[in-house]
Every structure is written in structure tokens, then in C-alpha cells.
Length: 227
Image: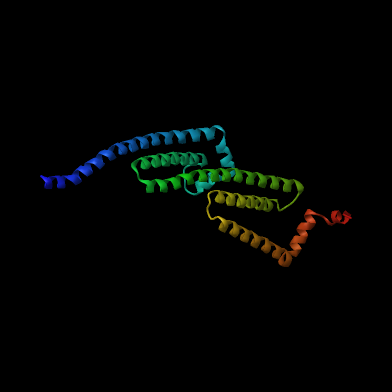
């Protein structure tokens, strides 16, 4: 009889663990089902809310929607925000479910991913408004050059747009904590190299072109009047 009890002890322990695990598994499944429903509701609310405030017009004019289409995606920026909100809610539900099951290591990993999603959302907002502002400044520079009779208005407008977008991208990457000081240092090195190359081009090979542009933008008669 004692031998039978010894053999049955592991079975009893397994059944005890199984009896304690099944309710927790049921709660985790219920949490996931509710999470899926809330995620769909959040995606629908985000997309409808952003379109209600005409945010899709801003992203279209900023060029983000065309950039996504060139990348092969069939969604626009508003749909991307809705998708990020959907997965944020799903990750929260997964964290709650796995935490209830006692899987702490999986919970820690999902928690890190979950906290990264809001940073991506903020970075996309920065890119959307930054790209729109860059295009607005480029159009303003081009219009001013056209009205002032400056022939290189298109080049100047592009230069202004690319310069603003470089800063915006750097801010977005810093928001996501991607690259850190390496990105900033690389950007400063590239910017310094571009400025040096332009300075050498003007100083060595482009003196006549620079003199012609300076004479066009600021005639000698105006400079002579300055005391």
C-alpha cells in the first residue's frame, strides 16, 4: 500500500498543479478575448478620430502617405496609427495574461516592447508635423524667391526642406532612443562635411558662380551705398 502511495504521489502533485493552472489559464483566455475586442475598438476610435480632425490631410500634404505607398504598403498614416494602437492594447492584454500565469520572464520582455510602442507613436507624430512644416517652409522659400526674381528658388527651397527634415528625423530617432549620441555625432559630422565641401567649392572652383549669384541677389550699387 505504501508503494502505491509513493507511485501516486507525483500524479497527485500533477493533478494539483493542473487544477491550480486551469483556472488561471481560463482567466488568461478571457483577458485575451477582451483585449482583442478593446484593441479593435481602440483602432476604430483612433482612425475615426484622426480622420474627423482632418489629420489625414496633414499627413497627405506632408508626404508621409506617398512615402508609405512607395514602400509597398496599402495603408496610410492614419491607418498606421490605428494599427499601433491596436497592438498596444494587445500587448497590454498579453502582459496581464502572462502575469496571471506566472510567466514573469515573458511579461518583462512584452513589457519592454509595450513601452516602445508609445515612443513610436510620438515619433510618428513628430515626423508628420515636422514633414508638414518642412514642406510649408520650402513652399514659402520658393514663393519668396519667385517674387524676388531669384532663379535658384527651387534649389533653395529643397535645401531648406531637407535641412528641416534632417533635424526632424534626428529628433524622432532620439525620441525612440535609437542610436543615441552616435546618430547625433554622425549627423554633425555629415553636416560639417557638407558645409566644408560647399565652402571649398565656392572658394576654389565656384568663385565666378558665387560672384554672379551675389551680384544677382545683392547688386553692387546697393553695396556701394552702405557706409
